[in-house]
Length: 158
Image 1 (cartoon, rainbow, N blue to C red):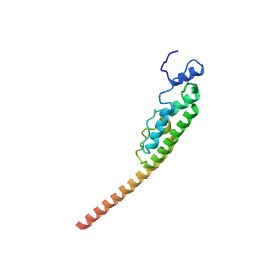
Image 2: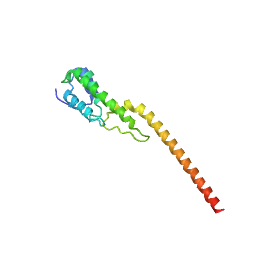
Image 3: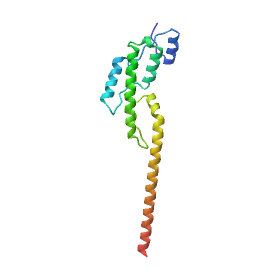
Image 4: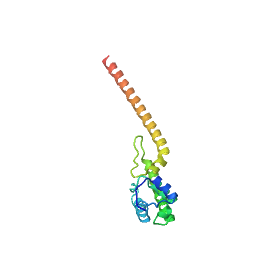
């Protein structure tokens, strides 16, 4: 047997046929994940740097290649769940800072962003509508003020 880099879906198929062992990524171990959990606790307004697809890969490997992982799977599942929950709480707190044109989601994984997407899109659309209605009312108010100014200018000349 030799090490090869292949797509994870092929590795899972080969693993199910007992034709390979999967070498887990360097970040899928207790010490690294605990370190990231501590970072999440220490930095309440910032997300720790994790791979873009850390949730998906960890779930696949825990389900399909648990025997290839160096740490006990129940501990890995626990720390992954803790990380996911704290990041979810932080992202929901961050949604309070939404405006009609921008949301900052630096450091979130693809799955985390997609979990928030339905709620965020609805809220941002409502905020945009409110912003547009306020601007429309402001524009109409300034147009009426201009009309009044023109009327005043005309009546001053008479």
